[in-house]
Length: 178
Image (cartoon, rainbow, N blue to C red; front, side):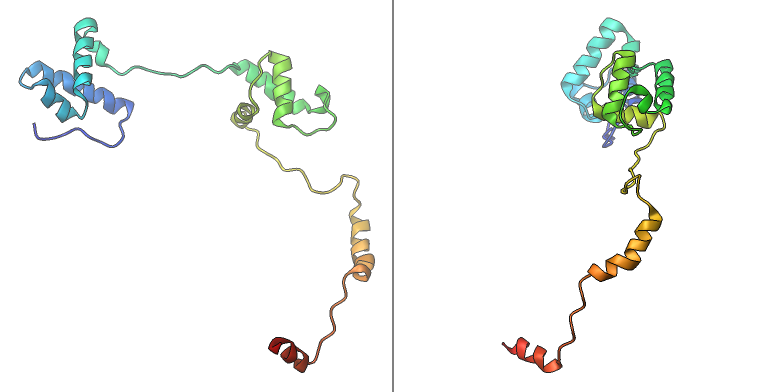
């Protein structure tokens, strides 16, 4: 056994393949535990663990397991209801303006579904629902664009700082030598 099984990162399928290769090598009964551990790139205790699992649970114990992770707290139906609530607007839900923040969405989720998520998780939920972060305009809603343009043409030039008068070249030379 000269080859070694040592990729830098193993996927679930590769881990299962390694365990099944161990099973094939074990059935030949020609290799010691130490040789198996060196060939497969695992510790001797891992080989012992695999042998224990084989003895007590059979060959299926070396198959890959499926891990789905924690189920989401909001079901698919609840997410659809949440999307509808968000489309209605923030003012419908008692907020003073029409903008949605993660804390406001958290509040709506809490009141509607009795689930209180962290605001960072609410951001992830919004992203999964297809909502994106929006930046508000940096101007007042009451602002009149025509009045602003008139002010920029008439008043602004009057209050702007005047350009300094040009000085003769010898003034700059005397200043630089000082």
